[in-house]
Length: 97
Image: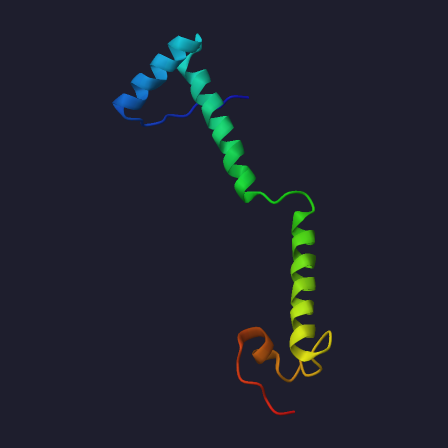
């Protein structure tokens, strides 16, 4: 169902819309709806995650982090995480354990 709304546009934009509407044989309102729909779909693609992409991205990041830890500490994980959590999360100096 269509909803009525008002838009404030400058005179040049109005003239351009009227010209394009005449050129395409469509009402201005239909042309504006088509442009808005197209633009909104393009913008949503930038911000909306693809189905399953979030989990895949998270797992990939976790795997990369594990690889870096293994390279840095010579094992797949540090053994002092609970006592040095601030170091691993925020870069604080490590505590002697």
